[in-house]
Image (cartoon, rainbow, N blue to C red; front, side, top):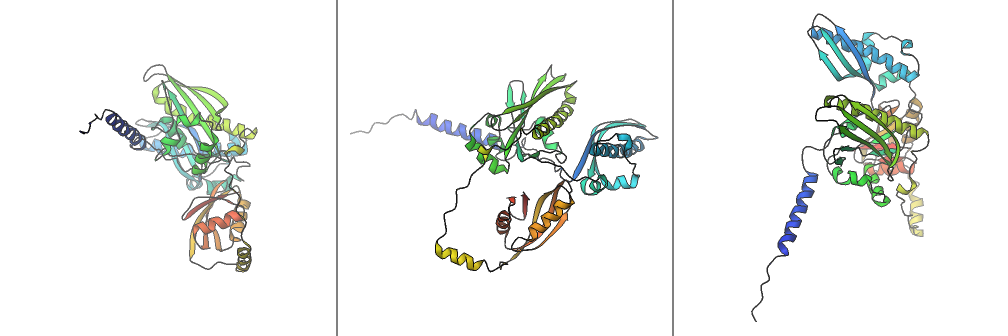
Length: 403
């Protein structure tokens, strides 16, 4: 019997569908227009919106004098904000002291003329050096780690980490050191666009959320959203900002800001981030940002050990210090004040196998770093710290612990 040859009419569409699907997946993962690493703000105090208007013989001298005045005005603004007092009561510091505690100048906007300098600047103060002068004792309260998924709606499109946006950039550049919210800010690179997109913020299922939060080291979710409405290209714009929270996408608050032109949109978004942070802090103080118990991964209980292994374990407990290779590991720990630094050093030094624990980077009100010498590897130290009641994140030569 002669075999019948059937045309491959169904095979070709199937292969084409597979190729198209692979192309979509490749397009979502590849590309240079994605990913904005967040700035490290744990070691600085930040004052924004310092306005200066200086005239001098040359443009360069006017700029230097403007920065010098910005340092002095920024210090008074920081002192007034920290102590909740009028700016006129702030103590005056010499230029040499200001140069020692200021770690950077942020240029928000500047206009340079032949002999005049007009600018709006930001001043960054080194936390370790400035904290002692301010008498800062750290934040009285801090939230659980919150995974940030910024959503932007413009025109008929809504997106998050699918590609770079000014809204993502505003959150990446926001300095979180002075906030009571512990933000976990993804960079938007790698697999972030696939799992942290606009569609994910609309899902209610706790199973997928538990996996994501465990992957990013967070306990809950905040979804800051902005809807950008433009009058015409390059013209005025209106931003509607919404603070949402949790897997149920609960609305905490909403407000609007305006920009006179497209050039002012980045400034408007930065102000929106600051105000949304204040809304989240107010919600935390009101008890609205409580960790959701349904997002906690409950580990199954370990099976009981056989009697022989229990006896062997009891014999091994007599050995106080394990024998093995010595490893040096950097341990990051939140330190609200000097007492917290001392307590952390004492607690870590008492862990079985730790031979020394020395604070190498001090950040009162932020995250300090200890150099820990441990007889064993990093995984062994992490297990020993967890046994002492610490929550441990990270791997390799750097661990982050918290109570």
